[in-house]
Length: 234
Image (tube, rainbow, N blue to C red; front, side):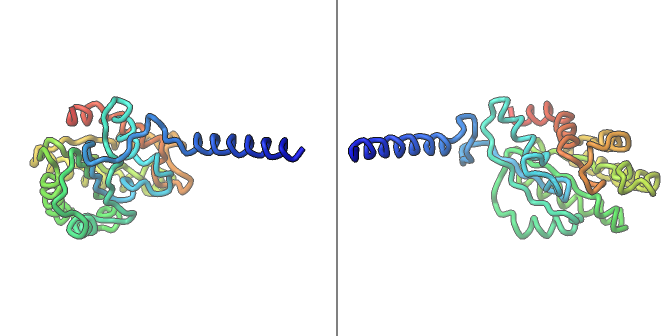
């Protein structure tokens, strides 16, 4: 009887080890970060860090996942961004965190907090020139590896509804400057402002706070510029 119990116990132990081994087995489709893979640097603010949503719903992460689905071996994005950052904050963070690293892809989305905090649009333009210079220097292929995303119109959200017209007007002015400077540096510019305005009629495009984009909206952004970004890496 004791022998039977011992054998039964050994079988249970072996089954448990087999089960644990399967649970720990990495996803064969998952790409581990490697120095040999493509690399991506995302610079920005709350929109880039994906405030209030899961990490895998951030638009830079969604972009990387779509690129991987196309067969590209690319590392998880390095994100230098924080909620509330203006161009000043981003420049300070670039100085503090970027060394001589070079990336295959670099994105920039910055400016909503300059508008929200009533900062000078002239200073915004000057800061953009420095940010774009830094972004190009961080790109392995110079300007070819850099792209710029416009500022979304948060006036279309429940948070901005009471002052929607004024917010939309000011965001448009900041985006005009953003696009102008991007063109001066010959950088790809993607206008997601029309998508952001869809939040006025589709509440699922913002999170519970009524202000920040949901993962669903970020998916629409990535879908807009994915093909052109893919071409940069091919």
